[in-house]
Image (cartoon, rainbow, N blue to C red; front, top):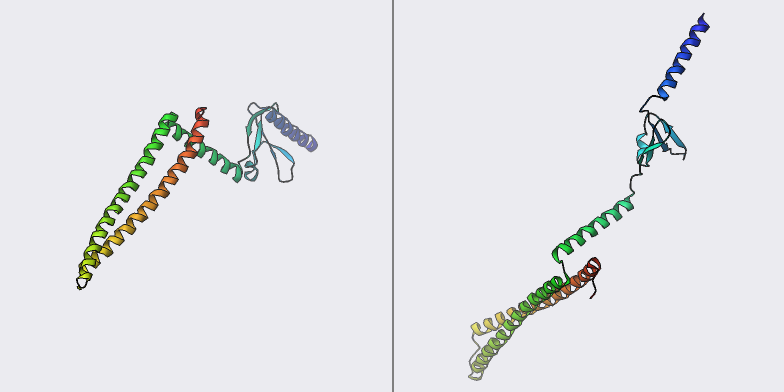
Amino acid sequence: MLRFCLAAVLGLACLQAWAGAGAPGMLLYRYTDSHGVTVLDRQGVPPEYIGKGYQVLNQQGRVVQVVPPAPTAEELRLKQQAQARADADAQLLSTYPTLEEFDRTRARKLAEVDTMAQIAQNNINALQAQQGAVQSQAANEERAGRPVPQSMLDQLQEIRQQREGLESKIAGYAQSRAQVEQDFAGQRVRLVELLGAGG
């Protein structure tokens, strides 16, 4: 009698397991473990294997979902680079819809730098004339046997300092011009590629 009851219980458990396996909506998760073995699991994918990717199968064994492996650090870096490039391209096309507009903007930027440099050079020329006048006055004082007034010496020193400052600005404008040329040259090459134009 005891054997019969035990067999009945075991049979019932097997029947329930069989019925569960055929239950609608049952899913299997297929993944590869750390030993390279493909595993089928009804409970899901262990956390340590999720990042490697897995497949979800229905009760007929057909793949219904594929979860790709998480991207590597290098893949993420390349994706970020591609996104940054796409954003830069979109901004370039938005700012310069045509090569003509681009070239006009480039010419305007260069003209602005050239104008600032020319103003600084004009100021240097004015200072040179002023310096020559003061030096001439100082020479007259010396020829008359009088010491050069301190005010004249201070004025000459101030003129020299102003000239040095303006010369430094002109050097900076030259660097700015070269940078503008370089930046626009690279942008123009890319814009030509994006527009599919020549020139």
